[in-house]
Length: 198
Ligand SMILES: C[S@@+](CC[C@H](N)C(=O)[O-])C[C@H]1O[C@@H](n2cnc3c(N)ncnc32)[C@H](O)[C@@H]1O
Image (tube, rainbow, N blue to C red):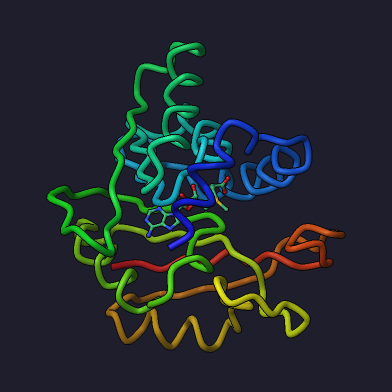
């Protein structure tokens, strides 16, 4: 949906502010990846890899999936430059095409807010997870001050929990882990992390 926007901003996406926010997410995510050394990790809506390239040492492999080729070009350049041997990129929009792959962990950071039909994308992600696989979502908590036609404003934990359960996820846990100034559309906001199991 925001594809064109991200295509245009890819080369200047990695600002100091975005890197700082991504580092907060990396620290939180790394705590969830203990004992994942033999697992395949898919970062859906990976962007330039600011988050998932920070966890490649904790998993077997990382697949960065994004609908924006330009964002992935930036990610691929980092993978090549840093000689990361277990990370690959895939340009795809799972809301338009059915992916033919399976994975153990799916991660989504600041992406769900850009996808209009939350349940539909969560169903696709559920289908490509192996049995017992994990979905980890990081996004912004609901903020009534945000009013933008192209993004959700964003999620109440209870609403998201309900959708995840309807899709079939179990052991759903959602918690807010960070509050920051001017981190979402120039507004103060908080971020949650949601863990669910197939
Ligand atoms: C705000 S960026 C977040 C990037 C990265 N996850 C991070 O936390 O730094 C959102 C990303 O989601 C991607 N995106 C938006 N809609 C998508 C879709 N339907 N399928 C795949 N990627 C999508 C955009 O191209 C963009 O790279």
